[in-house]
Image (cartoon, rainbow, N blue to C red; front, side):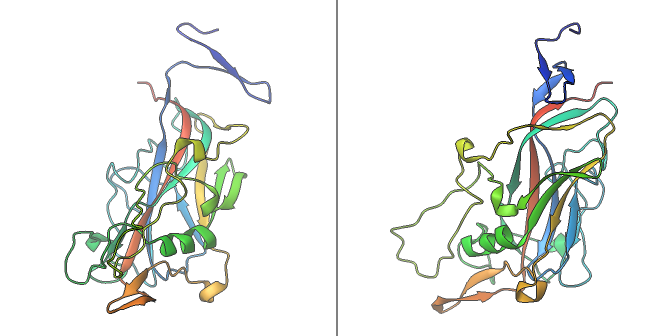
Length: 254
């Protein structure tokens, strides 16, 4: 056992990991999507702070520059030479629906209430989240091998906003939802953690294999003004999808 190691972990393949400089910390990466996007494959964990946040829309997009809210990845597309991770769970995070001044311009996304912003925003609509959860598939790829693959809705966020308005008399309010119950007990933990070793390549891929609605992911569902019983599509609705890889993380050392 190495010096200053509190314990060791033996993986199913017999490999022993000393828990030195390890911590319970997620790593995360984000991308932006415009309602109606038709991209068949979208990749995360391929950029660092200061790079471009991937954006997918109904046409050419104006993308954002990544900041610390978008990602905490140390090296694009792979672990750094002194990093490792044991992924125990994947937690997608869609906390906001935004409105753009113009579709596909992700630099103009806002959730400040004002003219044209649907009532109830920035909370995502339950119906819009259902579209994302049903149509999108999520895959964790390590060294070009698939280690997790299921619908986006299979992976419970386990935290975030949870709203219930059973007594509301305002019929113009959009419904609001979350990707599963915001409780740690609801998170789908892997039976065996997925190991990402030092300098090993990995990525998370969101795919859209569906031909429903012509392959378009129309998640921008809002209540039509003056028509409380009718749902419509707002072409200006956008969202940021953040994927958290949760588990034991070995910090980079200098």
